[in-house]
Image (cartoon, rainbow, N blue to C red):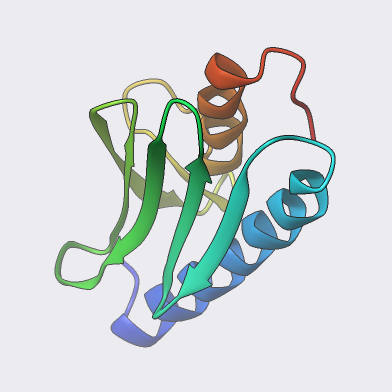
Length: 108
């Protein structure tokens, strides 16, 4: 189990990496990405939709809200990533998949 400090370090590193990749891609695709108060958001204009990625420190998870669904990611040391417990999908993979539902040719 991660300590609070280790969890925060992993979250910061993960969200900064995902933010940087999405920010680099957002110029080529039709969405905005923002990082504010430790939460990452991806916004689409038409139709209006927002994905939110935020840490939940008490349970040491990253929670994602996208396409009216919620996902809860746990840190898996063997993957060196936050992953969905049932599928093993990483946070970055889920974000790409979620964006592809809006922009089919999207890739990082």
